Image (cartoon, rainbow, N blue to C red; front, side, top):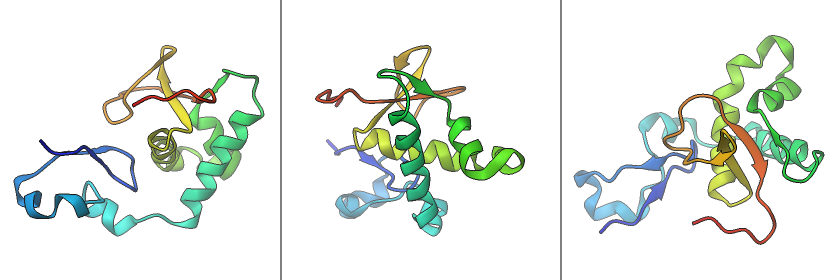
Length: 128
């Protein structure tokens, strides 16, 4: 049985591939695109912005990822940055800091399709 891996860049689950069998413990990226992209300071800025916006909300309140994109990139460029915001949200979810929701329920960010919302994970809550 293979241990589940999550891409360090996009936060999606990595599917096991036979060609990785000997090196599975060292696999970090789901694709060559994520390997080339890597993580940069802007990615960390997006993560900090997500947490900061959530901390300003009432307990249990959620935000739309577009709020983060608009706050960081302005009204003209926010749409082009939505995938970077969603990737940051998936990384934060993987680290146990936030929950990704659809219709008020926590969802698997690797398979979620359509609109999502972000919420701070309650202190002491563990989701494995």
